[in-house]
Image (cartoon, rainbow, N blue to C red; front, side):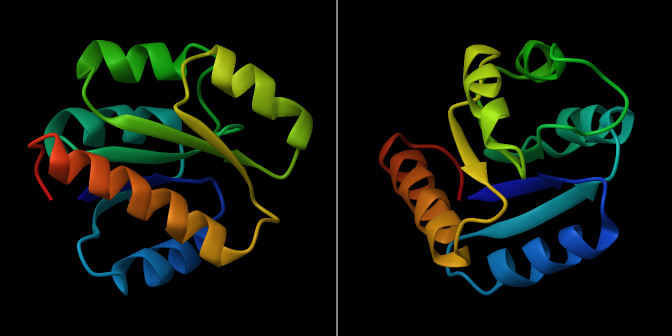
Amino acid sequence: MRVLLADHHPSTLWALRSLVEKQQGLTVVGDATEAKSLLTQAEALKPDLVLLEWELPGRAADLIDVLHAIDPRPKVVAMSTRLETGRAALAAGADAFLSKSDEPDWLLETLRQYAKRTKQGGGSE
């Protein structure tokens, strides 16, 4: 499964990339620190899943709609340190919401579940 990462903290992107790339069947195809770069990469790289910081600079709550207008296929997993934003992220079209304070194993399990669904559905891995 091809994963596109988006977080405005370079150190968080590095940690996410390090974590995800160690998992069999998951490939990080790009990363972005702001919305414009995320949208450009989403169009060019055609990821299966976007792991998205909910407070990513550069766009308001319509970011998921714009991502889906580019390509409706990728799943979007939103994440934030602010748990109260989870409901808003899901209402805006996120497929799942994770707290940045969740254990890394929870993030990986979520990604593995989407990878399994993608593989079963005939998507790319």
